Amino acid sequence: MKLHLVTTVDKYDKLMRDFSSFAHVGFDTEVVGPVKRYSQAKDNPFVNVHLSSLQGLSYGFPNGNAYYLPIRHR
Image 1 (cartoon, rainbow, N blue to C red):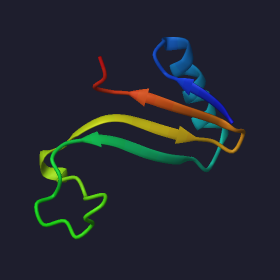
Image 2 (image 1 turned 120 degrees about the vertical axis):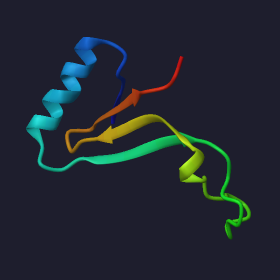
Image 3 (image 1 turned 60 degrees about the horizontal axis):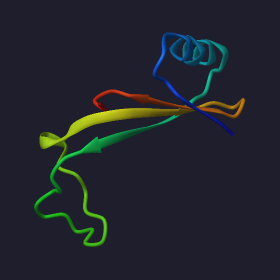
């Protein structure tokens, strides 16, 4: 797997080329925020989605390329 941090226009263009080349993609989101007040998962409680912020997106493609697109990182 080849990892790419999308922080430049060139890397963004490469991500878009992979999107146009493949019919399937895996993705995940990264959020931060307070935990849900009555979460039943004591060891790893759920995040309260109403009070959370999206931090970034991850994409994985069949060719082995994986990308992380930061949104709110400094």
